[in-house]
Image (cartoon, rainbow, N blue to C red):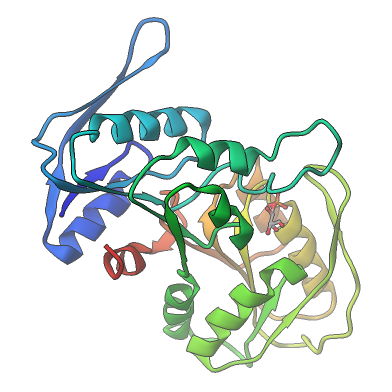
Length: 279
Ligand code: R5P
């Protein structure tokens, strides 16, 4: 099985190929003078290939489509989309809107598609290929297990993240709880007060995505006001747009932990083992 790392997932592709001892193909990614992308797989593609490419922005999607097309002559093409952009527009919220996740999924033609902690599992049905969602949260749990905490508790900032909190907490053997959130604007949310005993405890808030940081910052502030000792923010996908990191620290976070589905400074947990286990 040959592995191609797209421009957004080179570190992760390298880690996957390292753990499987498989062949990592070298590609060329550059821009034409008009801004269009030029993509070329330099090494021999072979008959079975796995492309690993997160689609954090629109160019990443174009690069993925180009890579899939470049592999047209392979007999089996797996596509791993560690972080799939547009997944949060998974339904029509207002009349006239597209289901963007569906629009993107329909463009991805492959033999198998793998996503990691996709925003909503229903998106998998939009792919023509057999699509499987992988869970990287036990790996976050394993990482957290090696840290020292005082009476720790895992908290999901909204009910959509309950499964993630549960999955990470199983690894740790500690309790989890969840809060309720109302989104006010693209960047602001309100977290409903809930009577959870956090006084003097270390809290790990876990979510699928930290994007603008609005959800985490609000949750961190609330828990700190309720007397939590140290508060950590963990997520699978560190989108970290705008001033997300600053917002979290201003709210009093002790540390940020994420996987490398998007390669950022906080990506201390590699999702490579879950990918390696399926390809
Ligand atoms: C929403 O349902 C997601 O699970 C995350 O809570 C959300 O994407 C986080 O966004 P932000 O960091 O912008 O609050």
